[in-house]
Length: 170
Image 1 (cartoon, rainbow, N blue to C red):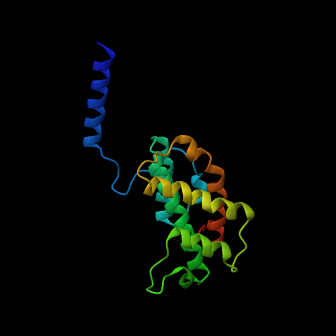
Image 2: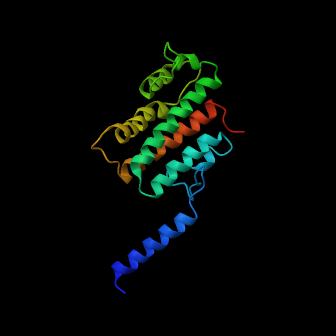
Image 3: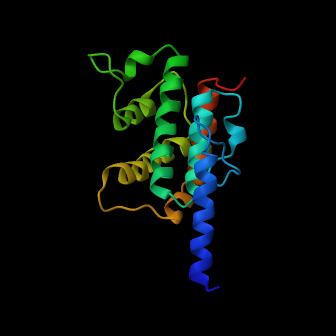
């Protein structure tokens, strides 16, 4: 049997198994934590935990644009959670009551006096947004593993700080 035939057989077997045993409807947990430690969000909110699993799972599968977009989503969610916890959610809403875009959320978050963000978080927020924006909105940009790798320390600092600010851990 040549290598090509063996690979074809493996793909057919994988597709057959997947067809009979699809992933759970609500998504599967990531088997490890290559981007963000799950312990940082464990016992917070189910939707935040699922986003972290998706970040780690996308990275583990080499889906770096998906990973970057989910990082962006996590940052946005944690900012909103912090404003809600402090009872100042109206500061990040438009006159029509819609939540603002991440660019504006970050600007308002950096200026907010209800908390004192660390220097590292202040510097990290725009970097996390930029990679997520490129992956979500640029037709020609394709994220690479190193794009995500250089964000992991920033992400850890931001997540840990906003989880604490929003008092999400039980």
